[in-house]
Length: 555
Image 1: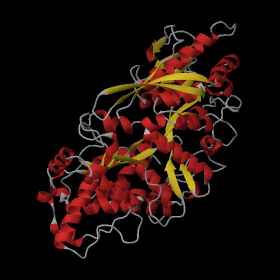
Image 2: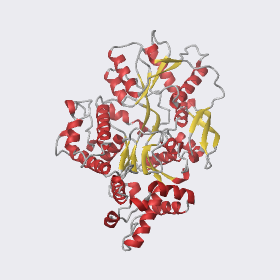
Image 3: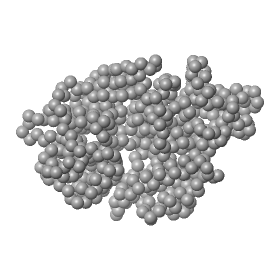
Image 4: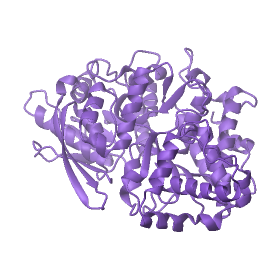
């Protein structure tokens, strides 16, 4: 089902005032919200709508201060502009900013981060989703507020995976009858369901998938003879098993030699994958993570162990790097790159897609003319590296709101708006227009009534995010959206499991300081560079990677 959300508020009639980032020429007498999205982005439009609602509700009050939105072209430009404004002590610096938590570290380093502890005290936010503040600041400051959260999802193409498994079974029945496709002992309920789903597909779908994969002509019989096989559901639940499976299938399909290799395992955000695997290697313990946490004597993260050969950080990073680069070298792992919009990640040529829960449903359905929603399995991305690990983790990310301190009087006005966004007293009913595409590709519009949500909870709903509160999750499950958006629904289930078992399920949020963005960008750019060089005779060594990572001794 292709998903597009549009806000529909019958009470809104007043045009909303916006201003470009470069147009600030006089003192801000309004509350200025800086957003890293262009006016056509749904995240901009939806915030514009709730801000307009605030302006309408508050306009008759004597101390009313209008909320306005300004835009920045992207997150990097927003960070740079805010840094310049703070460094120059620009009185017109924005009042509220939507960005990653790393911006809060910058604001706090200028002693300008607003504390919203009082304003969100009755917000209903699960306290675990505010603990990022404890890890970031040596105080009780609550300066980072969730506006909408997401995770990394695993999207399994049931038709493609069922096709491959069925074809392998046919060949081993003929050529290697002692081999077993599925594990005799391991849990395989999901794999059996996937195989059955493929077998029940219509002939046209099967024919098109066979044309796309061309199994009979690309089969490497020797690789199949040497393959371990005996697959279980662990290939969907544990990263190392998923990588091992993808490597084995790449060899069986002779994928590396193909002019257009199949994307057996597609990852859209390689730093997310690497960081979560590092967290799992650390036993889901921030103290053991490869980037060491700040201490009572320093507000900064400790990156030095990464570059010390033989350290636990060095060894852990090397282990994950070697697994990922070998899979890329084998044409098993494919990562973010420029591609035509007509080829979404979860396409005919992809078995596994690891992609943000916020955007994945759009990617899957937007241009997929053959496969339907029911042809995919929607899961939380693997929560362990290895099955024997005693703790599991999930990635949490998304949009955050931060405030920049001004005069005491201005701060009161900023906090009043934030309180309106988050406070349970602001709960009200909303209406959402939800557009989908049916199985026959015809458009369909759903009008969904949402009950008793705060403005910020509604914003998360409207932008395809989840909000970490009991009320949001209850309303999500009660509304029709739980059926229309199975990916976000999965994340609400993960959150509930986390709340029920906090000792064994851990939430991973990327640690940050003034250099964390440098590390993330460098890892991303270097791995994309390494992985997209298809003429290599062997993977880039870890030593080469570490050398490039530390160019300029920035850490």
